[in-house]
Image 1 (cartoon, rainbow over the protein chains, first blue to last red):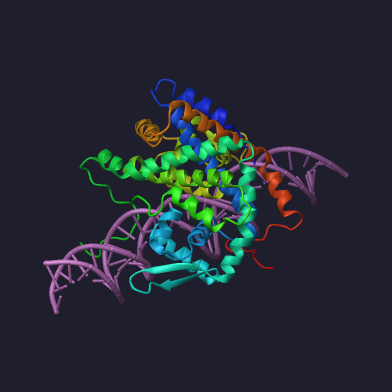
Image 2 (cartoon, chains in turn brown, green, red, orange):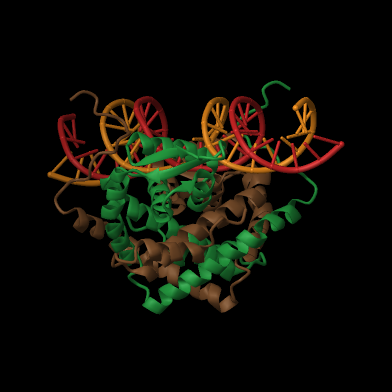
Length: 191
Length: 191
DNA sequence: CACAATACTTGCGGTTCCGAACTATGTCTG
DNA sequence: CAGACATAGTTCGGAACCGCAAGTATTGTG
């Protein structure tokens, strides 16, 4: 499990490779460590608490979001879970088939769909969440309480910043050249 | 793009839902914000710099790892990129088909394969990386230089901790009950 | 009532992803 | 040196995933 190279070694190799290139090391280290940490943590959680309930990461996140907020419209669930609506349709279907989630029509607006946990889903989350939280404590082991707070707060600022300014930034970046189409994806029907 | 709920609102909802349950909020906020930030940052980078070269996140990470380290055995590439070796086989195939990556056999040990960038791959990375780094600066905008350092350092500690102790922790957690098989995955040929 | 806007689903084409089974190669040991 | 074991990589099954286009249904609006 332990890597061939530690993060420190990687950062040194980057220094060697990019010694001549002007670049912003601190921000690079911060961003790449966010992803390293996210991957490592996710893998740990999947292979400890989630695996025993045969839940995928995404499945769990969706359940968690709905659990926290109670009934929730699907579009918001997708957004909170960080996945697309199309993906949510499939994931929700899987969770429904396991009897953990149910979908309801909206009483007044017929276009909306609302997700809610079934009693089984509630029970599962009530059982699972404490275990999940225990592992969050474990992975945060090397942080002081005040450090964990400060970490969370810095990340919160980054997310808020991206939510507020990311769209505009991307627009500015690509100027007037439209986004190139993806290599994959459905084609226009005809021409 | 901006969410229906801010992180602060979510944390409040959690408080309401879990008011009675004893839990460790700071660690929970830290961990969940790591994933929120990772998702938001990844989406921003995919839709700005990566999209224009039709690279996926994982494809880019693999190229990046090989670029930094030069020739590298596939098992280490997978580990550094945070993906399984099975996944790497497919990703490498894709990158090879685009002429960005090449694979070489190991001269003395016939089991090993080594990855290396093609000249086109080198060129692409030399062009792409500065742009990528610019966006890393953008997403880190709300952090002071010292904060970015401290953020990176805390995350580094978490990763190191998981690399050192994660395996044992998972073993302890599941005791003598073996890991249940995944719902998906290859089945034994016969019985 | 025509028409636009909204919300979700479906389907497509491609990628990614895991992990167990499988293949090939290397190494150890009696 | 043969058989056992170990290691590296590939294949494969099932699922997740995106972005987009198109389809369905519903709601809002002039």
